[in-house]
Amino acid sequence: MIVDNHSFPAATQALHFGAQVVAKNRLYFSSLGMDLCDEHGFPLPAFFSVYQALMDGGAGFGFLGNASVDADARYNSRGLRLTSAAHAQALRPLFEAARARGFPLGVQLQHYGPQSLPSKQGIILTPSAIASPTILSAYPEARAVAMTDAQIQRCIEQFCVAARYAQQAGATLIQLQASNGYLISSFLSPKTNQREDDWGGTPLKRARLLLAIVDGIRQATDHKVAVTVRLGMDDGLGAQGQHAALLGDVVAALEASGVAAITCSLGISETFRFFFKNTEQALAMSRDGCRYLKRFVRIPLGFTGSVADVAQADEIIASGDADFVGFGRAMLADNHFVAKQLAGRADQVNRCRGDAFCFRDKKDPMAERVYCCVNPDYRRPEQLQQHYEETLK
Ligand SMILES: Cc1cc2nc3c(=O)[nH]c(=O)nc-3n(C[C@H](O)[C@H](O)[C@H](O)COP(=O)(O)O)c2cc1C
Image 1 (spheres, helix red, strand yellow):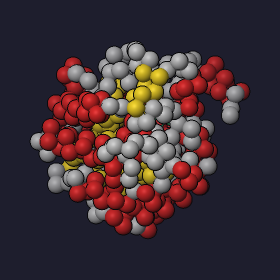
Image 2 (cartoon, helix red, strand yellow; image 1 turned 135 degrees about the horizontal axis):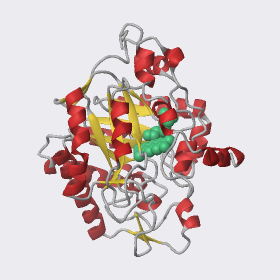
Image 3 (cartoon, rainbow, N blue to C red; image 1 turned 120 degrees about the horizontal axis):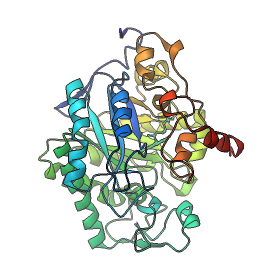
């Protein structure tokens, strides 16, 4: 496909993550957990075909969805795990394929924390014994615990071990999931972190867990892996929740600790639906938040969420609001979403309908994986599609 760099001069600039990792452009596929793993977190064949197609779709870089660092903290029974050398070995072919393409493929490391299913012992790990209302309504008997120092240290170690497995698999880029209400994000939030010890109190103290993980991973990987952070810059909960205005010192501290880039996002489980529906508002919040946070750092800082197309991404990057821009659902609907537009074939894009049924697949007991309404390769079974449309909320 012939790429016309003149039409999108800002988006088609190269992007550097530290000294070693370079992306050919500033458009990325955002972490999408496709739930294509077996119950032990090993990828099934379809997992490889999705990510290979995404790597060939024109984006400059991208991230695998949630790889859980704790075998006991899960979102559902089909998510990826990175908790053993065997998991690393299973992922090797994908990173070999990425290397052969010169494609920076990152792996997202995740602890689900307050939004996790309860562990086998019925426990949910949190900063201040506040679990997600969504989880508690489904599992009223679950017990949210405020993590002890020992549990926090164990969690830091789990991230470091998973990072070493990522490195063994061949990854040169890692994304820490510090957004969307999961464990690290719940520590960063003033609403869910009410601790009075050194893990809570001020924005920087709430970031202590994240900073300790960054530091631990950089040491564990001998500084050879570029560490990036997906940062939740607004949870949509209003005055008591998380806001970009609270995160200036935090992003500066992340840069000082050697983080190579920051990818911002919005929402937590209670507010995902709001952001999926109100795209104009979501986009304005992301742009305002990134513009503000960019004042505190020199490392690349960008976001994903509600960006319509490559032309809009180019305009956002050219305006200086973000250094790079991602796509989630649009790239699921058409894996070649970026390539087609860069080649001047926007009319051939298979467009996402924006209903976020794919996100609903992650929890619906009738769904066996994440599907798509419009991509013929991942089309949702007719009966399930009909069920969603009839119960559209
Ligand atoms: C089906 C689905 C799976 C997702 N999985 C993840 C994930 O594993 N990790 C993550 O950080 N975000 C995940 N997200 C959020 C996306 O990365 C992205 O931020 C969100 O879809 C908003 O971007 P969009 O408007 O371009 O789709 C997921 C979203 C969807 C729809």
